[in-house]
Image (cartoon, rainbow, N blue to C red; front, side, top):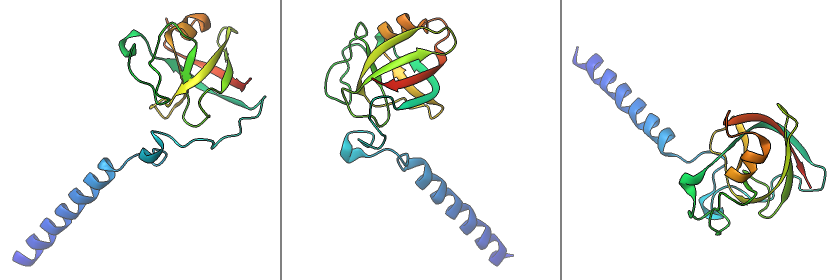
Length: 142
């Protein structure tokens, strides 16, 4: 009886340690030494296209420092992408309504894995994104 109880406690302890280790470890694509996400991991040639879900971040982040070091200004046409180099210009097309806008990458994100880009509030307004919050979009390096 003691032997079985000891093994059970050992198993529970091992599962707890492994569970905490996984929870505490950074995401596989997160690189602290690079200030967030890895740089230059995707083609940046003009015409490179990516499709997926986009979202936006609004006024609550105004004045916060972006990963590039500049302050977030909701009135500028900027965006957060996981891996494209800072200052890359993207043409973003909302596939739900056909509206387009050009944005400059100055931040890292989005942090939701299902999304490919977060745009500023100004860009979201031009894309007709502020009501729905999320839309299917095409990104093209400009």
